[in-house]
Length: 189
Image 1 (spheres, rainbow, N blue to C red):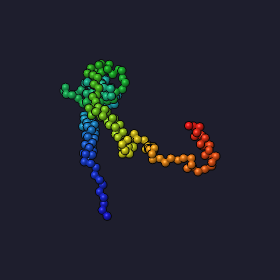
Image 2: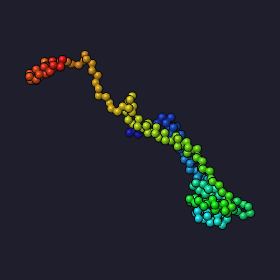
Image 3: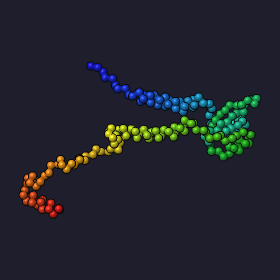
Image 4: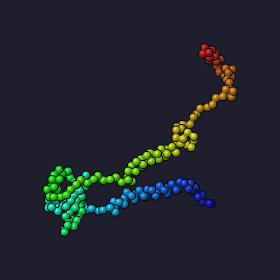
């Protein structure tokens, strides 16, 4: 008994799937790899940062919304180690930094990655269109109406010449019922 081979999808569909896979890998690599190969700055607790400021060990600081990056003073006018900490709502921090002669500035807001921006505008409509296509194909039934044909029509075409005419003489039954029915029909005419 011969084994039947599964029918192969059309070549255009295979190419589309390959392109979709390649673009997915590219997007994933673009989102994940920068975090692995980007600069790794050691994090320290906020209390250590304050102690280093009080001791005069901090040369400059960049205060951001989610992170404070600062550089320690190095020996012989060399740049020191770059560290970061998580900011705490501290209204006295600018006065402390200024009192110790630390050069500080607000960090600019982080720039959005162009891939993330594109994905946020393109992916939701694509998901919506994909869901619509899925349901249109599933409920379409292959007919000309497609997804909008909710039920099959049970209507019958009536052609006047083809229908058999039934008269009172053709109906078997009680004579009084026939007489009453004739009276009703005459009344309605």
